[in-house]
Amino acid sequence: MDINKILKSDYLDILFEGRNKNYGGYELRKKYPERMKKSGIFLLAFGLLAFGYSVFANMAKKTVVAPPPIPKEINLAPPPPIDETKPPPPPPPSEPPPPVKPTVQFTPPVIKKDEEVKEDEKPAEQKDLKEAAAGLKTEAGDVNGIDPGIVDKPGDGAGKIVEAGPPADMIYKAVEQVPEFPGGEKALYKYLQDHLVYPEKASSQNQSGTVRVRFVVNLDGSIVNVEVARGVGYGMDEEAKRVVASMPHWKPAMNNGKPVRCQFQVPITFSLQ
Image (cartoon, one colour):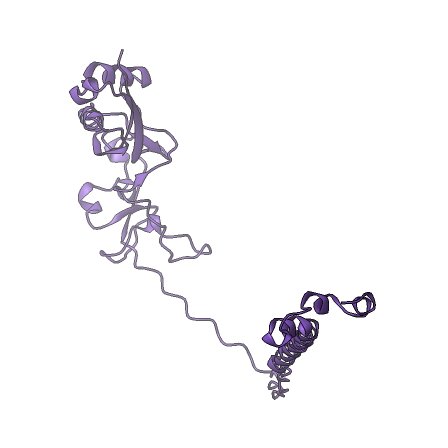
């Protein structure tokens, strides 16, 4: 190949000089740039088409939100006029006062001679008070009625019965004067120290702790309803409960100057020396 032909030819013509150009390799390499150009145009068109389809699909999925319904206006009829001339309803009838027992006049004792005592000055005898109550004067009444001393005076709500006090079996948790062990707190802890037996199970396993025992001090000071409020196990709960249940009578709690049942709690500590 002469120099002029070489300058006018590309590298494929020089590479395939003297070879069979119809075999296929020459044709593939010759048209490679054109095929790459067509492929790029096709991929770009496909990408634009896919992007346009996705945008169109998203726009089609948007739902139209309907406006909220407008509430209908309801006109209510005006209320009927108030008749100011109509009198108010009468108050409910009051309950009649309970029947009162007959009373016998109570005469304060005065030292006099028998002949100087008048008939109306003689004190009431015990037989007269079996079916009657003592009063300022002798009056008739219902034998099955109530004592006039528990009925309010006229003008303060006559006929109303004074509420009774709390029942005798009521258990208090807060009282004016708490129950007390005979001899006080020091005597209580000395009693516990003298009567407690360290459980063998707790001693063998080197266990200690504080057991809180809750109980009720009765009106007579006896101990009832003994239970473990917080235990530690290893036999210490049972031993603390046993010792508390065996305690002597306490001084009962007081409310308004009267003994009441009261709940009490004692901490019992088990400690290995």
